[in-house]
Image 1 (cartoon, rainbow, N blue to C red):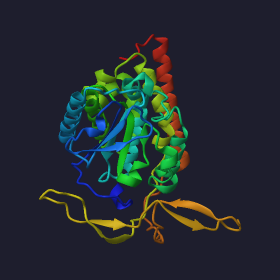
Image 2: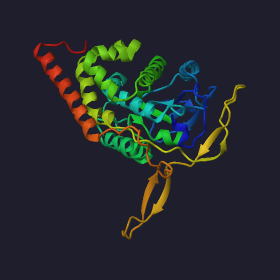
Image 3: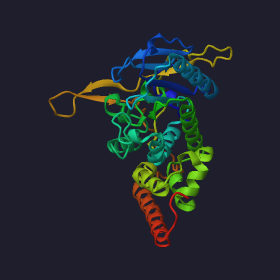
Image 4: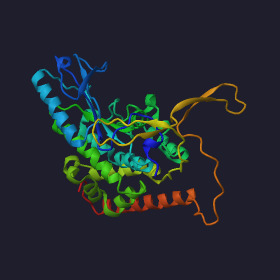
Length: 365
């Protein structure tokens, strides 16, 4: 199956190098800190000699935990840190080796749980202009649906200017082969950072277990929001549990139902170019990865008789001519039937919720 690395060009990392981190902090003396595996960068959005600490390269989960502990030990020694509502933690999860459909499923599951996650991340993160939820900026959902239905890969959503400040930054797929999660405010201790990393990897793990995003909706409708969330979140269930949990999940399901039921368009195999060496300092380096035509490059074209020149982001290579399908080829899914199935599932879910409300069902499990 086609993986993200087959369609985008970026420095390659082995799949075990799964976590990248950016931690913003305000305070005094931060620029003088020298902490292994971290580099420092100024950040104009911060105040009081604010600094952004960035991992030099992606790490495994365990090594990322150690790096976070070392960073906060450095903060402790600086002794004058002031984490404010301007400071955030950005976690990159390596998706280079995931199939395109798996990444769409990952995004879908995160968006179902997004309101719960942002509530846990802190009141100042809900509606924050630097980590907007899908409920705050719904155009992200429309663009995801268009990418999935019309292109078959992330295209419009790789526009950094438009989508960088969503709580899930999908534009990072184009630049790094990762999804960037921006919801967490910078805490005063390392534990919330490690909890956030673990939560995101748990969601990724559960996204790999399903074939289609619609499977999440079916399971949630069959088991109920609380029990479904308990199974999905596992050890993180109690961490996110809150008043109104059921309704927050139900709102998330309703919000992403069109995305979940949208069929993923098939892509032609990418055209190969010269090999591009994978970045790996270990002895067991993975063999050279092949480089493909760069998606996302700008191409100029004339649209019919329109005189003005337009610019379009070309994400997938031009497909090869399609051969005539054999007589025994399976029929493609009928979009009208897919839509009707989606509406029936939504109606069943809504009816179950109305019955539960009449019976005085308990919120939050």
